[in-house]
Length: 113
Length: 115
Image (tube, rainbow over all chains, first blue to last red; front, top):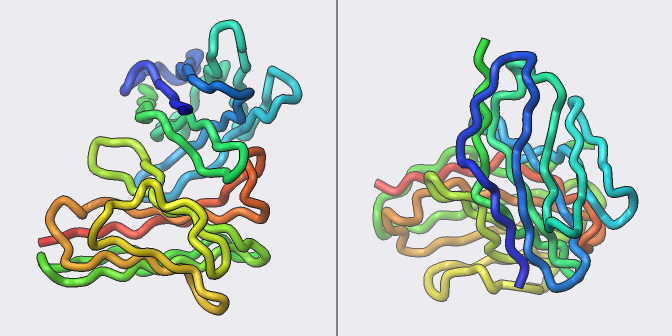
């Protein structure tokens, strides 16, 4: 069975500071991994995905994530936080055959001025 | 190209009533997924449908919940005899291929409140 664990349900950073949101996965097969962002009362928007090509994946809004097989991790980073980055972030692994997503619990990012 | 459309955005039902949630996938997408987001919890997979077929319903509660995706029209998630615990945000996502490496596009959700 596949699973995802997001470490830290709430992360607070200052505007301009580094953003680091942690995600570890468990999968018996090479995983496909995703990061989604959810703004209040909205649906989910894809930030980036890893599908076994380059291990460093660049996404929208300046975010990137690095797939590390040895650490079973797929942490999300952004060099400099903006106020507009405040949202909830979900890491997910997908079933290779069906595309259904198994989500982590989510991390709420707060950005302080 | 319109995105995934869900309606209604907000739905209030009294205990014991039925709730019908609709999802129109993006144009050209024949794969639909439903997820539920309970308060203070992450999103949980409920069901995966392809046109006229249920492919995976492993996340659906055994009773009162059903889903369909007819040849014509939107996908429907139906909850019979709603209870307070059904209050949640229900999200639909669609995909062109239904494969693990393909992006799924999400609707804005239907927020169900049971009173």
